[in-house]
Length: 511
Image 1 (spheres, rainbow, N blue to C red):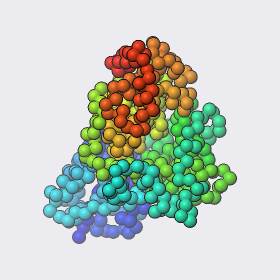
Image 2 (image 1 turned 135 degrees about the vertical axis):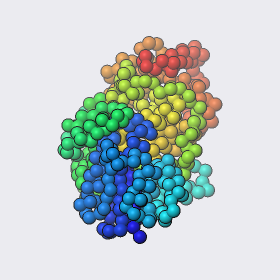
Image 3 (image 1 turned 120 degrees about the horizontal axis):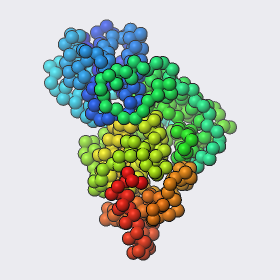
Image 4 (image 1 turned 45 degrees about the horizontal axis):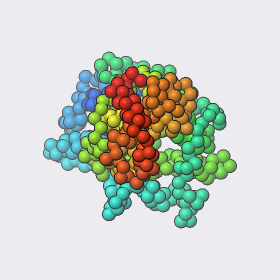
């Protein structure tokens, strides 16, 4: 039997067992499809990075001896949709069996199942061999339990895989060093230069995208393109991270600063989410480096990084597959407002939002606290519909694929899932932003003022949000202290806060 095997753009795992043996009776097919570029507006760097990574991956497999049919975006033979791609290549290659790797997006999972139902030949799906856990692992772990707390899942993963785990106890005697991971960066320690990961001319790919008329967002400077598009580049970046950034990662992972985009973060998210490098390799490399360098890397630095991958990343994927498709429709706080226009332009006087959005448009990147406590925080406080928030996050970040974006945005950031992911909404006034960044120093608004024309909008919005969502949130045990403070505010102050917040929500682009 001759077999057609499909590879999607985020299935670039060179270590997959499919590639251990070169088979003459297997044909691989890959394509840059309008179906994938057009279902949402994506950052131009995201599209370029995926196409560049896909092309390199195909060339490497061909060099290894595998048979690969690859369709570039402007190839006149490119069917541009998944059903037509499969149908065309089954017929032309004379295949009598179809195989694919399990996709990580629900819509593609459903589409491939529908394609297989129409086929009159055997069809099989295989694991991508990328994640630590299968789709169902989280549901199985929490079966019979009332809450799906990430910390419980994370500890199970540490034990199961023996990561930072010695003789039945967590390395260092503590499971989680999150309390030590909240320092503000004030310019020291210095952040070393990281080697630009990619030097190849990506101009031809960019021109194809532009000539095809694909709608994209954001900006691109090919002279400063910082996304890794090969496994070798990802491994180089990982090694440099361990040597130069890991010693400070944990301390400053929540910090934000106007002069630094990535601080001590690894920039490996695109490489991992496209599967160029596995989470296991990343975790094992960091763990080994920590054990071999006890004088320069404290356990809190290594644990803080590993928790994001072994814990949070696997946990979010489990939430996605357990709760879909209903999860994508959840709106537990009944928010209905539109996303402000400045999310697409960066044109706002609020310095924290301007810096974060400008950075996102310029580099297709912002780290987790910028996403959660700046852009996500403002969207939630202004009660934006989660559909609009989802679309923005999915499009603007190069590492955004729905399985990881949706539970992080709709769940963690917007609390639209009613508490499946987070135990409370992650909202704050200006105080948190000032504590973790230098954004407030050059802002047009005063973080100490709650009302009045010069007051930071986050302050009135915060108290107005608590007041407006009292019915949904006041019974939440983690919100008790804030609601007790809310009750102590006199009517005159609350009227002024509501008035200020209403003006911001009605016309956010004026602020």
